[in-house]
Image (cartoon, rainbow, N blue to C red; front, top):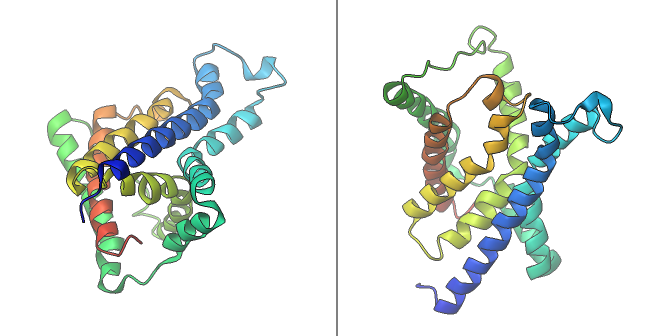
Length: 225
């Protein structure tokens, strides 16, 4: 069913509020790390931003999208909205979609790295996981938990509203680009892989856009799980 102009206007307003809050929260948390990395301030010269606090702020910054989504849902829909938001996270009744949900994303990231190598000439990422395969389930669990810091915002909140105005493909590409820009401070901060390993932003952008398209496809075919 086509959305009314009023519904589209409301979705636009909610999107602007979400992106503003998500970026503001995360980038403010990551700002001390940027200043320390570029020797604008010294972590050893202030009691306010110690190395430990700077590390904690890096982790807290990753919560920005989910914090923004939960705040807006609570304000707009109350506790019922929050329960509905988390109910989608707990919905694991995927049926035949378990297979693509578990395997297609790694395969797509692999394809994106291959394409990045062809387009940008960057070396293919190296990992020691294959020589130490017992780490694979551990890393899987870590990344599964880490997604709660972002996906309540990007997918459970923003994607729904983007698709009220645009088709799934354009919504996915737009969200993938915004998702990549949100990560920009990580390219400027010591301690993040993007900075430490000199990851090209173009490579990162391409990977997230492809990933965003796949996640949208999976979400739309699993009743918004």
